[in-house]
Image 1 (cartoon, rainbow, N blue to C red):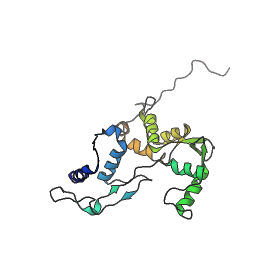
Image 2 (image 1 turned 90 degrees about the vertical axis):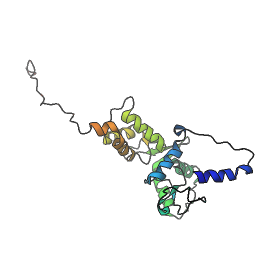
Image 3 (image 1 turned 180 degrees about the vertical axis):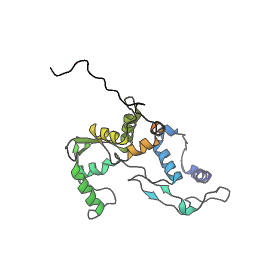
Image 4 (image 1 turned 60 degrees about the vertical axis):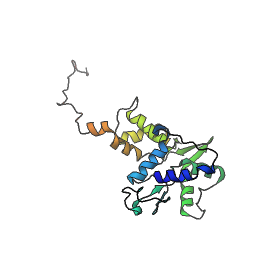
Length: 218
């Protein structure tokens, strides 16, 4: 960070003023997620482009480099996760493909094929159910995770299992590309589910049948 700060100091005299504001983590969620992806070397979600930098973007001295490790393994996420609905909405409104996608490419053919399952109503994207034909509202990935969090451990949540949670999402009429994958990750990270999963929830003895006081047949 010292090297980047030094570069900023060199450019101070090019501007009439310079202000540095500290943004808390809760108000800067996207930057926090990007920083964790870069430090953990984790797999990125679809829609995020990764550009590997084999050399530092600023000149540094030996004193500034502290156990930086091999430069070949470093990478930087250059773009944030864009809203996956924008490509479909642009295609429905103006027949416009995403930037960098040609009409003859396989990506364009895949977008055209997938767009047959979606419909645009009053500027909002919906997906038609495969068997029922019911329209499911398409939401952003972050909104979908918030819905799962509420279903799983919200005010009416009961830490339901993975299969039941997937069914609830589709029955309530929501859809996003990772709707089948995000519940699995949520259940795995839930402390309550991991702690109580191995405990037996059955009764300690067999059920006892209570005979009726009188027969039902006359």
